[in-house]
Amino acid sequence: MISSLAIIAFAALIHASFQLSVSVFTLFSGHAIGAKTAQAKVVRLTTGFLLGALVMTMLAISFTSFLFQNLFAQTTPQVIWAASCGLLFGLGIAVWAFYYRKGNGTSLWLPREIARHLTNRAKSTRHSTEAFSLGLSSVLGEILFIIAPIIIASLALIRLEPAWQLLGIALYTFISLLSLLVVYALVGSGHKLSRIQQWREKNKRFLQFTAGGGLLILGFYVYVDQVLAATALAHGGF
Amino acid sequence: MADLIKRSGKRETEQFQSDKLHASIVAACLSVRSPEGEAESIAHSVCGQVAAWLDQKPEVTSEDVRRKASEALAVLHPEAAYLYKHHQLVL
Image (cartoon, rainbow over all chains, first blue to last red):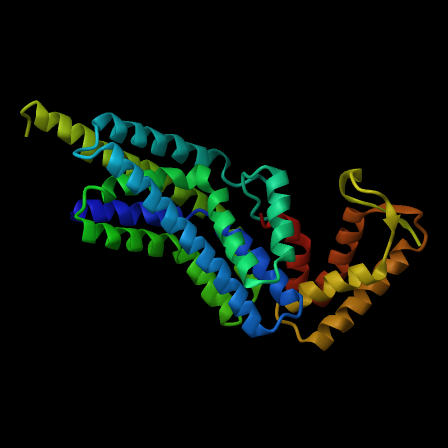
């Protein structure tokens, strides 16, 4: 059980290092503050965004866990663990190679049309419900990268007892939203967006390195723990 | 007043509108928590500098205006200038 929870927590930490939601949040709160919106409304809007991201993350992890629970009722086949590790390795290298675009700013790998669309949506969001759906879509927009930690966390989650599964989902959701929560707290407490954005720009290569490295480390650990060790045990080793 | 060629020439060319630039400078200043009066005064000064620069030019791109406005804003309010300049590069 501890091993499963550790995998879930580590996968969520990797999820937290992806930056699309934080970028959209930064842009969106900048527009909200710049449009002479009252502070109480800014808090309502940013809370709506945060809740949207929270709900979509929870739905994503719950959906994949439900799917795997039904597909692999007894035990997860080793080929699934091995394929998931392959996905982690592949995405780890992809993150290192092209998560951030070259040049100034914190431009992400996103196709420019989608980035422009999200920018325009962030600019025109005026209601909490719109902010909520922007939060939902910012998590969906990153699905290409977050799918790997979500899959691994789900595979670990279905090995737990039902009550622990709920705790696992809550743990994953909370940890994966930590970066967004930090920016939310900073914006809410009156910090300047320029400082937040400058910090993000200054440290973007470090964040990219840790996200990619985290995926590779998790892939290696899971491969040894679930594939190699299980194979060795099956053949009478150890 | 100069004609403004919009981003990458994909949108129609339009006349430079000082009030649009003013609004975007005010928004940039407010988003770094500047008081409203200061934001208005900075925007007024930046618009004046950009208008003077545009005076002898028949046609400019919106990127040129943004760059010139950033330069003027950087002197008056570096943090707002940073956000204004990098606005398109957040995502």
